Length: 427
Image (cartoon, rainbow, N blue to C red; front, side):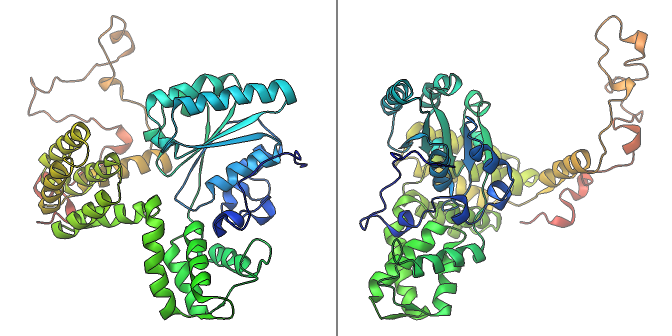
């Protein structure tokens, strides 16, 4: 597809970071996300056909969301405006809308509005975008590392396709690293020291599926090693430590920290949970991101062993929202210690997931038996609805069947005396 000659992408001069310089200009150079942009796959077809469809890219850091947004604009000949929800507001949106109208009027070109970290926009900011997406003034592409179903308003989400991206495989990361090492124009081909195989494997492991992180470390190592030098695993370890300090300001590791935090809570290690909480707070993490994990753990892992834990977590989430930093750290620490020390029981999540699997994947979706159907209207008895049902309080000792007949013997919840089953109620 031919590009408009005045398309402006992110600057890729010597001053740009390696991760920006190495962004591919077409699908042939794009690695990963084969389920979306492989030959004939859905997102690729939309872009190649020039469909004026807004969409949200949901995936972990460094999975290629921004690159896909720029490719979509480039390959459809659209004007491209990128704003970050971290620092932008309604005024910035209005400026883009005004420019989009001028571009359409003067050139007949559509405009792509790319909102990075769209989950950080509040409801009012998302509402400000909505009418212009609806009337076609802009084609919205949002990127987020958070679940759009939780963070994007339903009205905006209903007007966008949602595409889920995955972290890159080790093989794709290695191809990206090799390309950057060899590329003399945009990469490090002119200055790259020699990397040992062990060093490159360490970068792959450290990156955790994040191409940006991998290229950042590669560039830092190349600058430290200098032309003609050699980088082995031992020397790279020190560079990675320095790189982490430099690049963590953009919260690229917040998922790793959230994972360690949640696993420490589940494992009843209050000291570790407090430590990871402290790291997230020190990194400026959004308190909602923290409290969501705390709430999930209270429900999923503590569960029925101490139902009060969910109330404690909810109270902490509300207090943190009301207080803000730095005072929010106190109720959060209280709740973290409580949830970590609480006994654990995951029977609730196991029960509901078992039922959902039966319904969604095992074909066990049955209608409501007639005796359980609503009978609070005049014609119900005519159809036999409610007939045979016995009001439980009047017949406490009479057995009744509440499951569909086909599932009469099915059990999703362990007996009360062994609530939690073999999965382990732990103290």
